[in-house]
Image 1 (tube, helix red, strand yellow):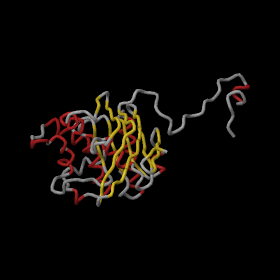
Image 2 (image 1 turned 120 degrees about the vertical axis):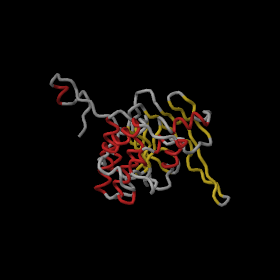
Image 3 (image 1 turned 30 degrees about the horizontal axis):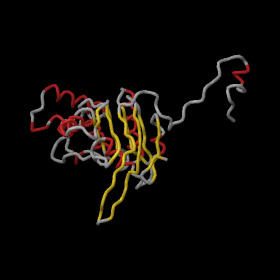
Image 4 (image 1 turned 180 degrees about the vertical axis):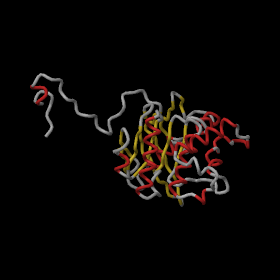
Length: 252
């Protein structure tokens, strides 16, 4: 049974009262690095409009790990796509480090996608004809630019970090599903992004492999990167700093 500070045994003994831990869905007190306010998004299919987001707000602090949980169709993946600039909202505000993303130029958005923002999905989306190392180095290959020696070393470091230092020469078809997802994580890490967006990163994996991927995400978070993850797995969501929930296009 919970006690308030005046009735706790430690308070009665004249000791400093124990303060309850904050709720998982309590907002961070730090100034947000990423903030969405009253975001809406609709789609039209076969002439029928569907409102996927109905005025959703979220603030993410620097270095915070936030999980967005909800059933299929709740709008959580659409919201993640808006946060990561893969989709443009119909209305509402979206800011990153003070930059108004709703009014930002395409060049600014492109710079974020290739710099501060990194995204991993439920499926790895590796190019089948490139090795694990080459897939990891893809963010450096814009405009068919050659990869430098320093960038190659960075790619090898990221593969080592995800436990694949000895498999950089293998094609995706020669790797297990869990190894393919770890290459996708290495690819997200290679450019020193500030925010990692993860859309059901364990959704296509067995429980043991999923736990390995979540351990990697936890390590990334401990190193200071902000993480925003969409998941339906309550156990994995519980590993984050804060859990927010969505249903029918709204926060609940």
